[in-house]
Image 1 (spheres, rainbow, N blue to C red):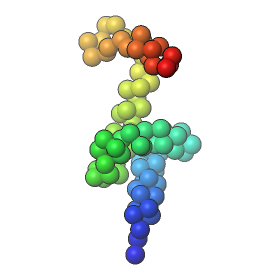
Image 2 (image 1 turned 180 degrees about the horizontal axis):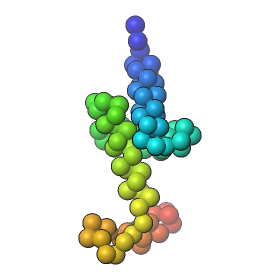
Image 3 (image 1 turned 45 degrees about the horizontal axis):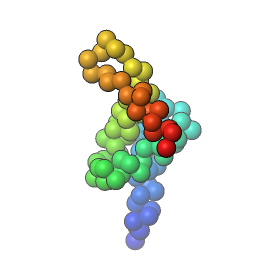
Amino acid sequence: MTTRRMMHKYYAQGVISELQQLGYPCEQAKSVFFRHYKDMKRLFGLEQNVSDFAKMVDEFERALNRKYNPNDPNSIFVGHLRDRAKKK
């Protein structure tokens, strides 16, 4: 019988291996996964299959690391909010 904890462990291992297939090195895949896991699990649950969850993690990571481009209509400047969040 597989416990819930073991199912979560296998799910996490699967997502990390999918992130590696998306091009992340082993250690970076682990750090990216653990950086976003709690928030994404809270928002979306573990209902997606492993590859879809890994793609969402990758999309979140790329969005966080994207630099502000004033010529891009989909880009919004939030630098002033970031400074406020760091002060608290």
